[in-house]
Length: 473
Ligand code: SF4
Image 1 (spheres, helix red, strand yellow):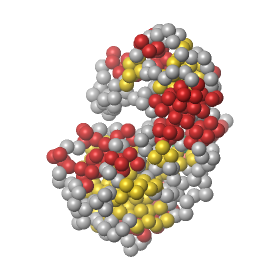
Image 2 (cartoon, helix red, strand yellow; image 1 turned 180 degrees about the vertical axis):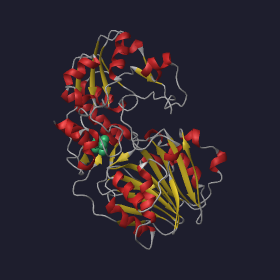
Image 3 (cartoon, helix red, strand yellow; image 1 turned 90 degrees about the vertical axis):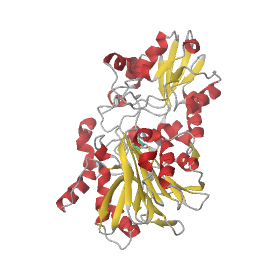
Image 4 (cartoon, helix red, strand yellow; image 1 turned 45 degrees about the vertical axis):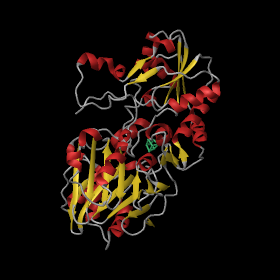
């Protein structure tokens, strides 16, 4: 297990890609597409390729550049590919849990890569085990291929459609058969998935549009909630397999934190949304200050928006070591104590003697804001006013984001004033729910359960496991 030198951030479960590109070296395309999605998961990566008869797979734990080389990519020959980069929320971080999952079925080989989290995994796993189907990993993603292998239907398209009603929760999937790639999005639309056309006539589907742009795609469109889109030799085939859920539930955190700023989600530029989040924050939490600084990188657009609206100059206050990532080399104890210092360093000349507005995207566990404020004070900052681009996160996420219990969430245990005291900043302000949605520019269609506790799907089956009753008591 690698050393976790990460910030107090929430982590997305995965990034996925599917490709149909005859005669184009799909494994290399998948590699470069995954590279654009590395931020969505740094623990494991995999690529599976079909040449029309067999599926070949390479996957392992590590960053994409650690997992793949020219040597292991060259045997992956074919026209169809799916690929995955993983951050684990369900199942431990081992090579066994890396994706895609590839199995042999009575209809030929099948590969699946998944982004999201099913809330009824335990039930589905137990069903499979009772039917005598063996499972080899602790990941929830294994249930998809195992269920598809036994689903009714004459084609993969039909079998996917027939299995979908059983899957409750967040799932964006890419499914590889001998002669096609199927992209599937759950009826709530929790996780993003888009599709674009290659200049050569093939197609690519990916978690974020930045991966499609990286591969040169045009005519990009989002896959709709409940849709199956098939990429194969025939033209792109689109099927509304399940009606979209009445309550659509795009994950707000794609805008706040997960997606790259150069991606588009729900027709909205992530970068522009983040700038507007900063403007809303400035509107709601004015304070006399000398400079606005972001916690890099996610908060940079929001800090620009705050600075512009408040008329306070923007400047860098921290420099980030972009290469540290999730290292698999254990730091020494003395380095571990340095914690965030291994990732961020203060630019003293920009903060000394200054009253600072510091912009951050979220506070989850509350274990890094305090050290960051201390670093700024040690560097001579006169005042530190912390501003957060979303409301307090007081409820767990069960839909594939790594904040699964009430106990770990600082906003569940403390009021804003108690958090300010704990972090030891001069003032602390969270963007209101209304302000956040105004910045996104949508009145509904989003999941905000981690802020409100109002879940878009029935989560009673798993509530007891996370101390929900206790939390309400
Ligand atoms: S609970 Fe929060 S993190 Fe989870 S899907 Fe909803 S908005 Fe996203």
